[in-house]
Image (cartoon, rainbow, N blue to C red):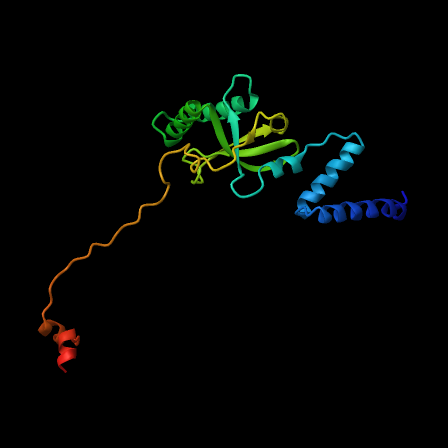
Length: 206
């Protein structure tokens, strides 16, 4: 293999592509560029590729980390979420926190008509998501792994917002702050002087 000859063909093509991206004012992220180039190479060589870059772009940006999965019997992505929650329910004590939280999540999703899950990562044709069982702003979660084809065929789409901000969850998810009790006890000028503290009146009369 003549490496230098290959470089003379590939390097100018890559330089032209990046120059075009800059000209069109696209935000250039090195990691994403590498993934797109890999996808292009795999596609040109008829090698199976995973569209990881497209998946990550779907959930990239402020408020875009959340996915929406419609509750339909024909939606395999919903079946994966439901099976994941039911597995935790079946393997947990009926008195446990996990049992109650997962049961509540199923009820919450079914009442809304869709589920919401938070994107983690995408690789090797699969994407990982969090099911945040105590609310979108809290870290407790269980993971679900979904084939990327379900994201590419719109069985999983972007939620376009954060569940709590969209009114899908109740509660403010904020830790309670204790307030200090103020005790108003009158203290005489003589008591203040005994510990070396002068009252305002004493200062004015000095």
